[in-house]
Amino acid sequence: MTDSRAAAGTPAQGQPAPAPAPAPAPATATAPELYPQYCFHLSPTINKWCHLRAADIVALSSHPGFQGQDLYFHLNHPIKWVRVCGIVVAIDVYGDPASRRGQVQVVTIDDSSGQTVECVIPLPPPPAAAAAAAAAAAPVVRHVGQQGQQQYREPQPQQPARSLPLIDSEIDIGHTLDIKGSLRTFRDQRQIKVEKIVHLKTTEQEVAFWERVVQLRREVLDKPWKLEEKVVRRLRREAMGVDSERDLKKREREKQKEEMRRERKRRRRLEEETKRLCEERKAEEMEMEMEGEAKRMRRLEEERKRRLEEERKVVAATPDSLAKTQAQLVIPTRTKRNITGLERKTVSRAPPIPPRPKEPTGLERKTRSVSNDRVIPVTGKYAALGL
Image (cartoon, rainbow, N blue to C red):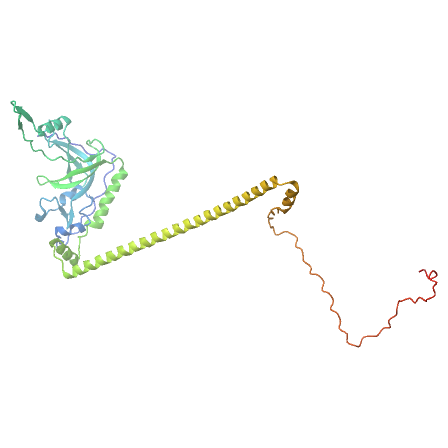
């Protein structure tokens, strides 16, 4: 094992100092209730990245009932995943430098909270060591004699492959890092198993991180985590697999409601689909009707043209007199005039009504009738009379 330690000095002059540490939580007369592990999925901190200081990580407590699970507590809040921000003050490398088998890099972070925290980074093996390990793990076959006897060498057990953290660039002393990882204890000292590392380039990023630290402490960590008694009982029954009759009935009702909701949703979907199909069918029928009407009009127009063509052929084949007679019988088609509404209106006058004859009443004035007949004497001298 090699131990190469590099100590870092104080931050450079002019570098912005981290935000002031939040006030510690007020001491309570009685310790908060620590809930069983089957209640942890309701905790606001168990499956989240908790923004903490190095002093907060060192102050986390552990309980005998959760040893070996890398679970730690602040009051009664279970914490497993943390996120810290600080300056790199030391870099240590442990392991076999030749093969890098199990070699790790330990980065010490100082966030000016009064404590430092070590972050463990597993290093990848070199390509030559990886190839040698693969060759050692492969079975070896050796032929003995002419009978083709084979002798196998059993592959050696290998350690499982380690997942490497995500690191955006090289790490050096004096860099400001934002580190995510899980908590663990090594020789009674808190460590962070690194999952991701990001370099912070500006002061605004550090200030935003410290604001998240203060917000988490003010909204979550300063107050104990509380659950209602009925919720704890229900979770206990679920964990033990014992359900009361009331819970069974409630679940049955919820199941029926869910089935009814699904049935209504399915019916609504079927109605919408039926309505859409009806609309499409109506549109298709209207389109077919329009196409049929157009076809009928085209057929009539073709029939009329055909008849005109036949008449022209008949006129061309008959003598002149018959042609003239048939030509006179051909009635020219009247062109349809467009009605604009500005035409002069003609008033049709009815024929005059004949006067009604008067009926005689007997009181009419009597007039003497004068005869116009000429009396011609019988004299025989008709020449004098001009006859």
